[in-house]
Length: 118
Image (cartoon, rainbow, N blue to C red; front, side):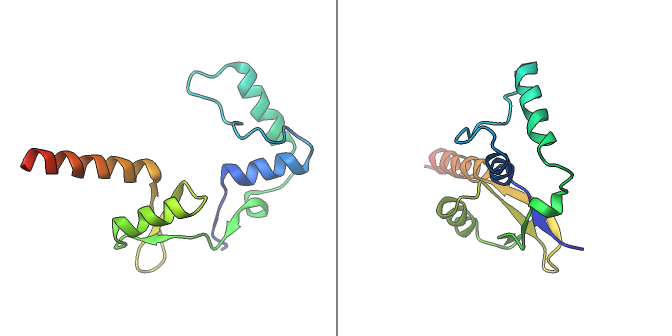
């Protein structure tokens, strides 16, 4: 079994290769999106021409372990193009995902805890 990650960057690359909306990084609809946005995604998916996830995925993605220091994970997220990282256990099995949003929330919680303890 192959393991990998498919990101919005992979789908954008597929769209630009097939002559789609080049330079438009906002292909995914907002929560209150319209049918127009939904139809746009449908057209993008039609362009896959029978490709499967394995054809698009980034193999052997950058991962962090569940024991990785939060500061190190934050640094990876800030220094790379990735907005989320798979979290694996000691056997390399996927157990979760950490996002930039998770790191920001954790930093805010620590800041508030420090303010309350002062």
